[in-house]
Amino acid sequence: MNLSLKKTLALPSVILALALVAPAPPAHAASKEIIQLQDQVQQLQDAIQHLQDTNDARMAVLQHLIEQTSDNVNRISQSMTALQQQVSSDSQNSQVSGQIQSLNDSVDELKTRVAQVNKTLQDLQSQLQNIQTPPAQQGAQPQPGQPQPGQPNQPGDNSQPQAQQQPAQPQAPPADQLYQSALTDYNGARYDLAAGEFSQLLQAYPQDNLAPGAQYYLGEIDFRKGNFPSAIQSYDAVLEQYPGSPKAPAAQLRKGEAELRDSLRDAAVRDFRSLIQRYPQSPEAQQARSHLNGMGVRITPTKPSAYR
Image (cartoon, rainbow, N blue to C red; front, side):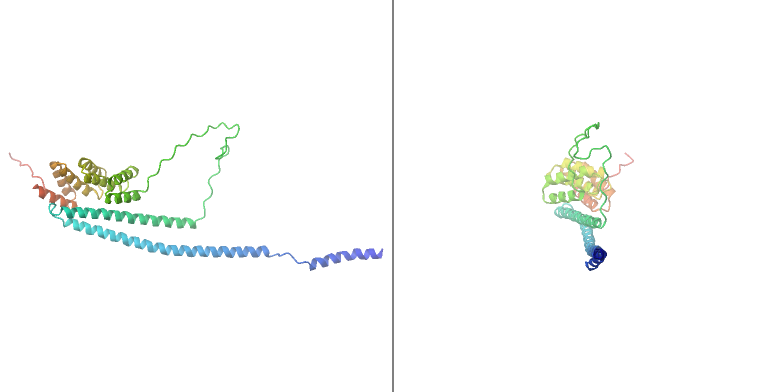
């Protein structure tokens, strides 16, 4: 009896000794992993910030280069205007005038390309900013009672099936992209393709800043094809729909020249005189004076005498 009692009393001591000898579970293992994960997240954030700083610096350099290019294009345009003002005789300088017009077309194309590069740069900057912002929440949950997409109506649902959706109409490219492509085709003498692109721009963006130029070049295409009545209509559209556009003086000049080609001498004289009156300091007014001088017509109409 005493021996059994001693064994019973010794059993808790053995258990306690085993508990002390056994290795303790890693109490701080989870905390250590969290700390390591936090360090990795901080390193990733530092790398992202460094990348953002590098991109900002490069974007600033690109923006500066674009601004310099735009300034150079504007100076070229001013030089072309000064060169046009030196053209004084249409009969002797018709070839020079045509070359100047071709250079003006090239300058317009260059301006469009610079604007497109600037827009691309701005879009890239917006995308980089979106990377920094947290993702937006998912879309709103469907209202109770509404079947989710891909699931049939539940039994007892009296809602009518939705009407079949019409196919979406193809969206037109951006106005500056359309204009640049059309101007490139125009300079390459691909007149039918250019006319389609200019017409598409007018249909999709009738109030855009590039719309007057598109309408003007439609007249230029008809002029080069020898379709002078249609060219006159296009130039008239520029003067009527966009009277304040920079293309308005050129449109009135070319309208008068198309009228001359179409044997509408009196109409041409009226347009040349109107151009000189409305834009007296423009290069187009100087060319209109040359036309009138070559025709032997007074620049200002003779006032009728008050006495018979």
